[in-house]
Length: 160
Image (cartoon, rainbow, N blue to C red):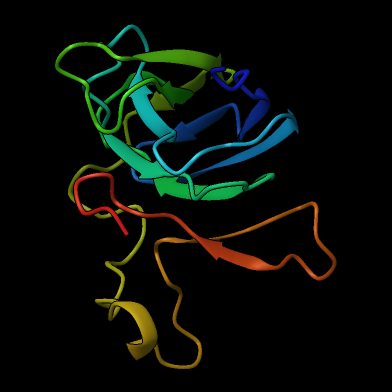
């Protein structure tokens, strides 16, 4: 018998940013479980679900977390989507369904395009090579565990 899709809540903050500023998604599964082939994508509002700007794959049985991304510099409206995969990594045949879409995030162009909104970040090593004080770009914290236990996301193109 197929597993019932999870019920998901999502909230993106802030509601408006200048291009190049950070946007944070807080998400949670209130019923059921996320599976390893489910993913969360960042999209320009109205864009095809198979064409995210960025995405992360959920690890099995995760109850929620946060994901912070840098917004594009051009003006647009963004949204996050929680995608339930019906067949692993198959976006060509549309074997997935959107379970939840976040509130919209309005991106305004930066006030001065000649100056970056934020200085460029240092390159972050992968995996266990992360030095003290650096952030793993694929790490997130779970709001449903004491101390905000860290967990990772995988790239759906390189299953773990």
